[in-house]
Amino acid sequence: MAGVLASTGSAVVGARSLLTGQADQVRCVVPKSFDAPPRADGVYFPFGGPVQRWQRGIETGIHLMVFGDSTATGYGCRQADEVPGALLARALARLSGNPVRLSTKAIVGATSKGLAGQVDAMLVAGPPPDAAVIMIGANDVTSLNGIGPSARRVGGAVRRLRSAGAVVVVGTCPDLGVITAIPQPLRFTARSIGLRLARAQTAEVRAAGGVPVPLAALLGPHFRTGGHHLFADDRYHPSAAGYALAAEQLLPALRHALGLA
Image 1 (spheres, one colour):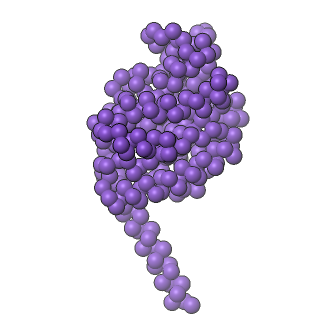
Image 2 (cartoon, rainbow, N blue to C red; image 1 turned 120 degrees about the vertical axis):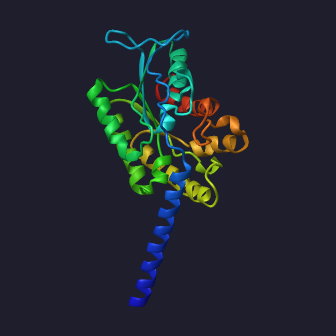
């Protein structure tokens, strides 16, 4: 019996070491994000026009806040009006007929461990938003943060935002298998863990009262067959066209949650 237990323990440790080694290799392949993404915060108007810097006293119909990682910030875009938050804010302004304020709390490189801090920053900054969008997951995969704990942290952030009165839409972990810059077999491993994380996120988000949007299932086929134009120059993050596709998938859920359907 002792021999069996020792053998089993060695196998578990070996598997863990293999995964850790693969994750280290993925992090080496994934380009470091040094440039700040375009800042798109401000007030968006129903009939277009330039974005206005928000100041106290400016009336808006909806306050949209974005949380998460580099994809939530629009890293890879070259202009502010290309980032997902800007695309969603402009669409909501058009649909509602009212000005929409966009605030971004997302941070490049963030994992689910940083979501609580982003929500804390929201509470310090002022009143909670009417709507929140969260995009998170890829960095939890490459950091081996654990599927269960990572998903529960997302659920906790959703619960806090819902308690504050915001509707919450979560773009779950994307399909990392579409990133050809990650070599095989690492890409297969990253994809497998990412899809499992997305399923766990979905359950936690629903339980917390949020609306999950399965980005892996909805966007994966497009990125797999759509060519390089959907990727930014680093071949890892989406391009402006890729973010536009993501915003198209998030908008219906956000629109419905806000009663604009």
